[in-house]
Image (cartoon, rainbow, N blue to C red; front, side, top):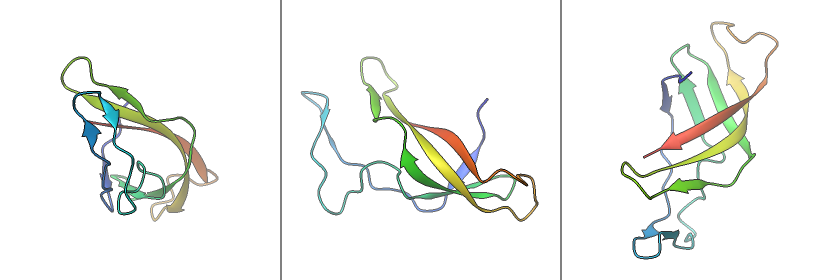
Length: 96
C-alpha cells in the first residue's frame, strides 16, 4: 500500500556516474539519502527519518530508473490523534 506524502525539506541527492552507474562520493553539501528529513502525510502527521535500516538500492537497468531505502521513523506531530500509542514506524522511500 502506498501513502501519498509531502517532503517538508527536499534532500540534495549525490550525482551518479552515468558510465559506471555508481554514486559519486558525496560532497559535504550533499547529505546521503533521506536520513534526518521530516515527512508530512496527508493525515497531518509528521515523521522524522531517524535510522537507515538498509543501504540505498539502485535499479538502473530498465527505465524508469529508481532507488529505494528503508528507514525507522519517529512521529513528531500527530494533530488528529490518528497514531495514538504509535511513536515509531518503518517506511520505505522510493524515488525516481
